[in-house]
Length: 210
Image (cartoon, rainbow, N blue to C red; front, side):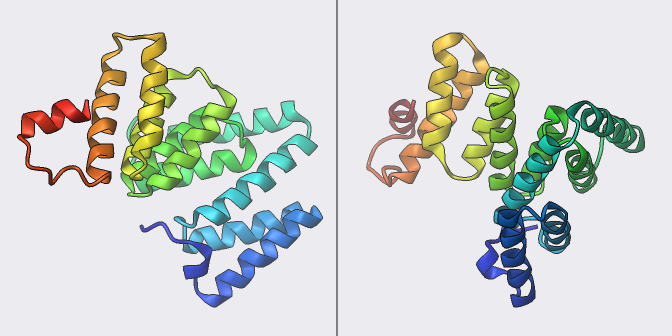
């Protein structure tokens, strides 16, 4: 399930994406949501369209009674959990998270499930997208921050993961997960900078990365 830009979609879907963007700008949220849904059913890894969809979902959620929307989203989430059990295949977990977010785009558990499923489906940028959405809602959610760091590494963005690990260690210097994230991010950053081929020992490389 590869991640794909709008420009790489087939022409029909590119036109739909353009129509969805115009609809969102004009406030035609129903059409924007319907069109984004059609595209994502064919190309779930199209992050540009997923961002459009989330923007429309959030606007719709704000326009409606928030209590009613929250209750509706919770009901969908309970049904999804009962249907899937404690463990779900990534594709099913991804679809269930999408169903919950359609009713409650600020549902943190659903966003976390979307991130976990996206990472399992080799959609790291989508996992980053979901993790960042959780961070906007709960900036101090340490578990999400760690998972976001992992997603950044999977997306080959070690600089962001390293900054996040440093921030986590400033508040909890002995956190083993944050320390592990920093080590992984440091090594990944070293590799990305082209230093891995330098004539040094493996121990030196790890020491330099850390």
